[in-house]
Image: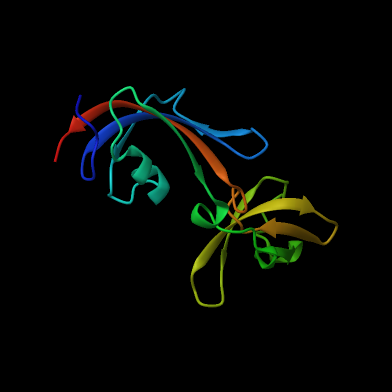
Length: 145
């Protein structure tokens, strides 16, 4: 039976869990996903696991937080005066904001708390600081390079 190798386009099913078992991603609704091994479309640990798998093969892979979305950085949690928000905005926890940084780049933030005069906003990726546990199943090797 052929095995997937670097450069192959493959079809995979997966489920991603955090250390506490919470499911944070899967292919249940959208169906299997297409990935080209070695094309930097997935975490390198996932590419490495897929390389050498046979169709129908199942692998469990843990991607450490440092290799996934990085550590959680407290300096990415900021206070923003409500007066600095657009006037038509009624801030709510979970609301997304986009802010311009001093270097001119933009950062996506999520409001985590709303106070009387300010909001707390978090610029960390929601999975920052989390080790991710993938369950992978190779469904098909679509092209062989």
